[in-house]
Amino acid sequence: MTGTGTGAVQAPPSRTVTGWSGDADYFSFPEHHEFRPEPVVDVLRGRRAGVIFRGMVARDVCAELAARFWDSPDRERRSTEAPSYHLGAYHYHKTTEHYLDESERGAAALDKVLDLPDDPLTTFYTGLAEELAPEGVDVRLARHHGRTASRGLLRSWHGDGRYALDPHEDRSQCTEPRQADFEIQRVVDHEVCALNICLEKGDGGRLLVWNIQPDDASKRRMGLHHTGSPYPTRTLDGIECRWIDVHPGDVYVFNGSHVHAVEPNSDPGTRRTTLAGIFGFIDDGTVVSWT
Ligand SMILES: [Fe+2]
Image 1 (cartoon, helix red, strand yellow):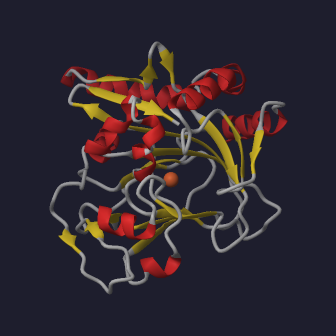
Image 2 (cartoon, helix red, strand yellow; image 1 turned 60 degrees about the vertical axis):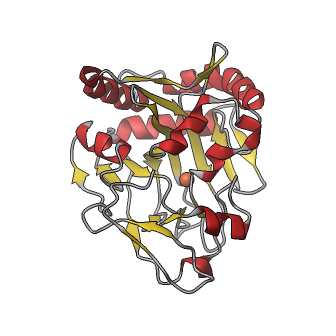
């Protein structure tokens, strides 16, 4: 849950978020120029904060996926909380049933967009499954009473404030009381990993990751213990932060328990579109993914 245990507990002023921070070895984002599942396993097992695979997806595949996303009649707009367009379901702040209903409803449209040879989601999860199979670990979609989670989420944030997507972490949302019956909640005893595949992006639009996994006391003080969002910027003052530039075709995975945010594109006329998912161990022999 808190990485390798090699970090130190921070004790900054009371209004700052407190929690676990990793050491320099842990808080790094090594870059590779082809996909290799081993460094993903390092993130899954809490040995490292993240990893980036530069140019893993061909530019023409990215352009095709983005074009299909924007052309899709099933693309939806989210106007509250985090302004965005999306295709595919997201579990945030929903009941298990609601999320699975939406996953089912969106599956055909998502499959249509992803219907390409070597679609990047299949490449990623198949590679991860092959890497973990010899260890007796099964990698599969999260499920509930015979129904399955969405296999991916296409999304374009368009918040135009200081951030396109406010500082948040992905772990708290996995304790949503309305999803208490859903197996994904067991991931909070392990690492919550975020997968993002950059399909299109203008200048700016970098990912910011702070070297802190907020503790429960901070979350409760701010009322974020079931949502993880948003962490006011002033509460992050003085905490180490990494800015990660990404380009179309880059695939990046990071420990979503760290507070992270998305910088707006410098040109508001450009789009930042990703194909995303969340995954993690729920027990020693099972990794599940959802959105
Ligand atoms: Fe996130």
